[in-house]
Amino acid sequence: MLDTHQELWLLVAHSFDDGHDLVWLTNVPVRTAAQVRQAYQDWRLRGKIEQGDRFDQEQGLAVEDLRVATLERMWQLFVLVLLAAQFIGYIGRTYNQR
Image (cartoon, rainbow, N blue to C red; front, side):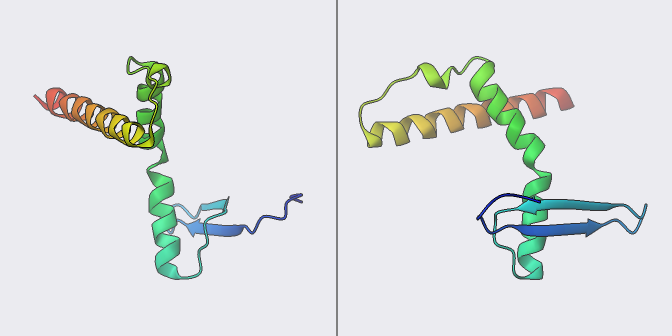
């Protein structure tokens, strides 16, 4: 039993191919079938998101070492880091295809 006062939703995805169920808890409100599908699609992308975070934090961008003084500069830095990660990811995908 979970000791929490947080509202949680239990999602179940059944695979008709192999008969297995995927069961997980989320704090994201899911009240319609469309919201369940969206939550599942988002969950499936978690590996790619974690890869991007790992790259940002561990492989050279050193985002934690950058210091800014204003919120506007923080947004500019965020956009710059996002663009750099997207560009490097694009190079990685296209370079490996050749």
